[in-house]
Amino acid sequence: MTADVDTSIPGGRNNGHFPQHRQGEPEQGFWAPGDQVLWRYRGNGTDQVHICRPVTVVRDDAELLAVWMAPGTPCVRPVLADGTPVHREPLASRYVKPRVRSVEEWWGTGVLKLARPGEPWSVWLFWDQGWRFRSWYVNLEEPLSRWSGGVDSEDHFLDISVHPDRSWYWRDEDEFAQAQTDGLMPAALAARVRQAGQRAVEVIQSWGPPFRDHWQDWRPDPSWPVPALPADWDRPAG
Image (cartoon, rainbow, N blue to C red; front, top):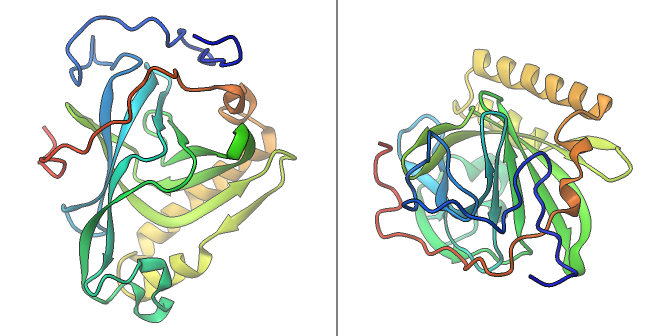
C-alpha cells in the first residue's frame, strides 16, 4: 500500500485486512471489506429493478454500510425507449414516457455511499479530479433492504446537497412535485418523504454523522478491482 493513500475506515477496521470467506455471503450477517455486492433501486411503484450499481464494501456492521462505486463501473440505468437520457426529457413528460434499461459505465469520479440501517436516506460523497472533495449528497429513499447479493431501495426524488462549508440546499424539488402530479408519489408518501428530509436537515445542522466522521479523507484500497455487472443483476432478492 502506498504511503500517500489512506484507506483507514472511520469508526471501523482497516480495509487492508479482509476476512477470508465466500464473497457475497455476509459473515455473521455482514459483508467484509472488499466484498462486491449490488446497490439497486426499484422503479417507483413497481418491483422491477431499474438501477443497479456494482459496488465494493468498505465497512458493514450494525451501525453503517459503506460502499465504493469505482470509476468505470458498468451500471444499469433507465433511459427513454428512444434512447434519450431521462434527465434530457422535459419534466412534464419525463415520468410518463416508456423506458428501457441501459448498461453504461459510470463516467464520473468514484462515489462513496453511506447508509445507516433503517434510515430513509443514504449519504453519498463526491470528489473532483485529484481527490478534491466536492460535496455530500443526501439521497432520500426507502430504507435499504438487504439480501444475499446486495441491497435494494426505491428512490424518492427529493435530495439535499451539502457542501464543505456546511451550507446545504434542497435538490430536485421540481422532480419531486412532478412525481406527485404523475401519480408516482402518493400524498401520504410525499409527506413522509418531506418529513424524512427535515430530519436529515436536522442532522446536517447539528453536523451529526456521517458528516462529522471525516469520510472525505478516506481513500479506496488501490488493489480493489472494478466490479463486473453480473448477468443476473436483476434477479429477485433472496
